[in-house]
Length: 288
Image (cartoon, rainbow, N blue to C red; front, side):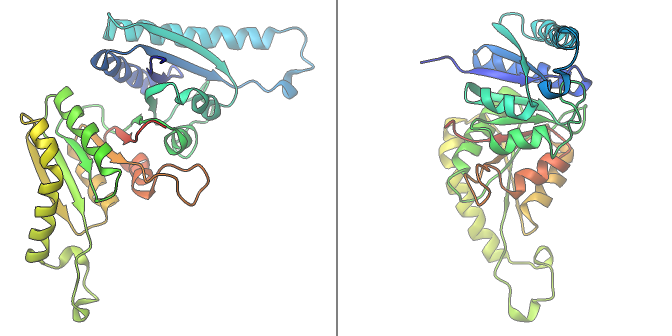
């Protein structure tokens, strides 16, 4: 069986430096090698009439400089982990997805330049987070990260992956875990013009909270030192999690599995967080 890596995509920008640091720490914590990948785009049709291989040579030299700098940063962060570097040619999202099956975790910055030309969310990071067959961590939001690990939990099969990932992250970061559960209460017809978040439903809330407590019981027994806080809300899950991300250091959500969009592995809550969360976002999913 091949050893899985923590893989980080880097383009030399400040945000990707943060991704390299986070990835190195994760590789060290998990006891697995770190693989640093830089993808540069090269279109043979555009350059087939160029004299010699000057463009390709310069591009590869720049790419090697990016991964070498990232490797030094990773070595400073986690001196004892094995580190590999890759310079790949092609479309960044496609090439990162090519190697994602070898990843225990894929780490990306949420925007960049250079080898990730034009990278914005909605481009490379979104495509990788949406289609990768492994967990994906996107570094975004504040630089002064503090607070609990935040987890969005529902009653879907993906909740087990979210809870395992979130509890392990809380242990690794030596912090509390804040669990958010959003649900839409049954509202009398005569209140149909009132926002669900403004309606008090104590009995329904108590039942939902009891269900959540039961759902978390196995993980609380396994991780007894993790302080667990609960937030039960009638607001939309994405809105509640984005708001709570302002005082969190990491938000963990699940994958919906393959949906209506061919190959898509990420639902609307995850997409909203990738665009708007104020801390890093970890998409938890089982390896395929």
